[in-house]
Image 1 (tube, rainbow, N blue to C red):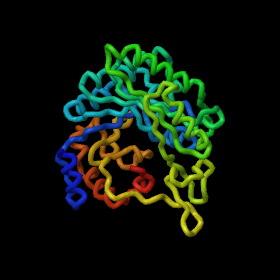
Image 2: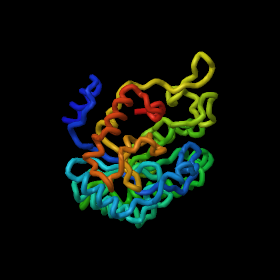
Image 3: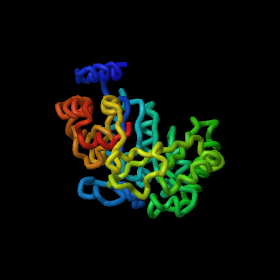
Image 4: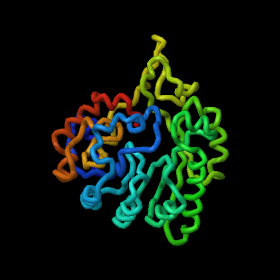
Length: 311
C-alpha cells in the first residue's frame, strides 16, 4: 500500500519513496549460448560492461539478506541465460525458504531432466520458456544457435517433474512465451491449440523490441496490432506512444551479476546505476539522489531507455 501511495504522489509531482522495493530482477548470468539478433548479450554488446559474467556467492548472499524482509518476488533473469549459473537451484531454494516467490525465464537450451527435477525440488514457482517458432526455421530466425527440439523436450521434462512432485511441493507453473514476429505469425493459432499438449500451463504472446525499425524490419509482424511500432504519415515506422509514468521504477529494481542496482530491465547498458549493493545497502540505494532523479525523469519519459519501454 505504501508503494501504491508513493506512486500516486509521484504522478502528482511529489517524488519521495517511503517504502522498500517489492520485487527484484536478479541477474544470475550475463552470458548466453544464443545469438539472438535483437539482444545485446547475444550480439556481444555487453562484454565490456558485465564484469563477472556469473553472480558470485557473496553478491547473492548480500542480495538475499537485504531483500528477504520486504521483497515478495525475485525474477532470476535480466539479460543473460540464468540456467548457465551452476548454483541457480540453490539460489532459488534459499529465496523460497525466505518466503519469496521465484520466477526464471530461459531459452531452455541448458535444461536437462535432472535440472528440471532440481528446479522443482528447489521450490521454483514459475518458469518462462522462450520458444518463438514451431519449426526449426521459424524458431531459429530469432533464437540463432538454438535447437527447437531441445526446447520442446524441456517443456516435457518440466511438466513431468512438476506433475510427479505436485503432491509434495507446490506445483511449478510452466509458461510458454512467444515473441510476435513475422517469421512465426502463421503459427500463432497452432500455439494456441497445442501449448498444453506440449507441457505448458500458460501461453503468453509478447511484442518484440526491435532496433533500427524506422524503415521497417524483417522481424516486424505484418499485423500492426502485434507490433510496438506503427507507420507514420511520413512513411517511416515510429514507436507507439505509451502512457506517462512508470510503476515499475517505483516498485522494483534490477541487480546485476556484479551487484549494480539498476532502475529497470530496459537499462541494458547499465547507464543509470543507483550504486552497488556490495558498497551501500539496497534500502539506501533505492531512494538516493540518483534514484529520485531517475524517477522524476521517468515520469516524463525523458531517459532514452523509456522510449523503448512497453510497460
